Amino acid sequence: MSEATRFAFGKNWRRFLNHLDEERIRTAEQSLRNMLGLDDLSGRGFLDAGCGSGLFSLAARRLGANVYSFDYDAESAACTIELKRRYFPGDGNWTVAQGDVLDGAFIESLGRFDVVYSWGVLHHTGRMWDGVEAVASCVEPDGHLFIALYNHQGWISAYWSWVKRAYNRGALFRAAAVTFHSPYLVGLRLAVRWGRGDFSLKRGMSLWHDLLDWLGGFPFETAKPKDVVAFVRARGFAETRVVTCGRRHGCNEFVFRREDAHH
Ligand SMILES: C[S@@+](CC[C@H](N)C(=O)[O-])C[C@H]1O[C@@H](n2cnc3c(N)ncnc32)[C@H](O)[C@@H]1O
Figure 1 (cartoon, rainbow, N blue to C red):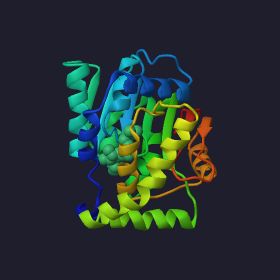
Figure 2 (figure 1 turned 90 degrees about the vertical axis):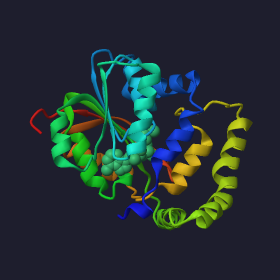
Figure 3 (figure 1 turned 90 degrees about the horizontal axis):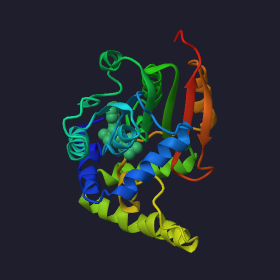
Figure 4 (figure 1 turned 120 degrees about the horizontal axis):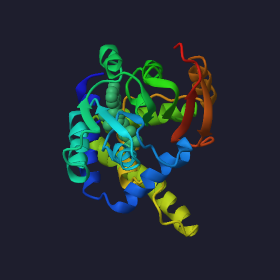
């Protein structure tokens, strides 16, 4: 994967940070609590692999975890450092680094964590299954693995792959992709939510940033929920929560508990 076709997640995060407020942070905390089935994370080690803006690292830290955040992208890591500076200046229980989930030596150097969180990351690495294997190896016995991966939709996934590749090719393609898809990806979703009287933002992200992330996110792989479950089960885990998006595009979310201490 050449750098030219890699989506600059970090720049998008910088824009996102300017819009971050207390409500979004609380929404992120709630999503961690719900999915993990834990009220707080006091004293637990939390690895945020591919932390992006750092919002979920911040949420985990506020829930009491000792957090290690890393991202491949220097600007994403810088965003997370900025979040830490704003909310937990000088805190010794939150480390932020630049690192690659596919770098075996780096991953091994991190040790093990009670909670390993990698949301919407591994399908962007170019080697998704190696990425799943890597984050699974960081989970303590009895610990939790929380990952989210793009849903596999057959030919529709092939279409999105083409759009994402084009989006990263230049400004003209980018403008065309945004113009063509925003009525469906933003307009329709807003209309449906507002129709239901739902003005909240589920994971604390804004629809606009979701749109740019979705259109630009390349490399891009997808997986069927049953394949993810089988893959992670084979590594000594049992699923505790699976939330799929059915036949639609987007991320399926999985929480597993590590059962086998010998892996
Ligand atoms: C869609 S964002 C998700 C960010 C965050 N986890 C969240 O839930 O908001 C994907 C992130 O994965 C990072 N990423 C992509 N490949 C990576 C790799 N090989 N190692 C670490 N991070 C990576 C990107 O830089 C980007 O910040």
